[in-house]
Amino acid sequence: MSVVKISDIAYDEFKEVLDQNSIDNYVIRINLAGMG
Image 1: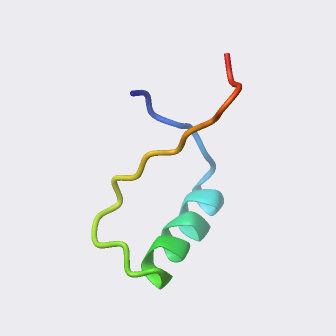
Image 2 (image 1 turned 180 degrees about the vertical axis):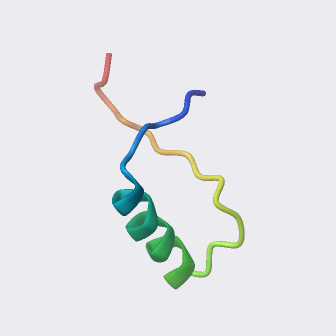
């Protein structure tokens, strides 16, 4: 598994979405089908 690079603004917005949906920890898995 690798780390995704995003801007600080995008990180803050994404973290806010996780908080709004009551995600306890910030460990998530994103599946990008068809990549590579």
